[in-house]
Length: 99
Image (cartoon, rainbow, N blue to C red; front, side):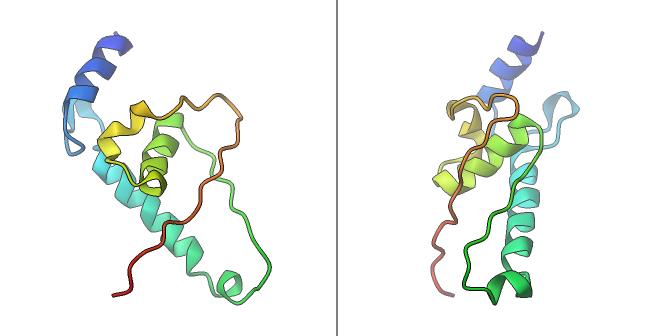
């Protein structure tokens, strides 16, 4: 059953909510907002020392977030290497153009 759901999901846009799921775009917005909130923490911005954050979540959520860092479409999250249980994957902040 999951194979059929994943196959249908891969053919859909990042905005679909088929099968009662939260859309990929919604997950992306929610997780990128969290990253931005963490990056803007005053005590992190004021330190010259490197810092690290570890995100623990379902693999799909983490792969969707990774699309932001990889600068690929969020609906392509399943094209990224599978996240094995309890594995670390380094993500680096994307340089954002100045407003």
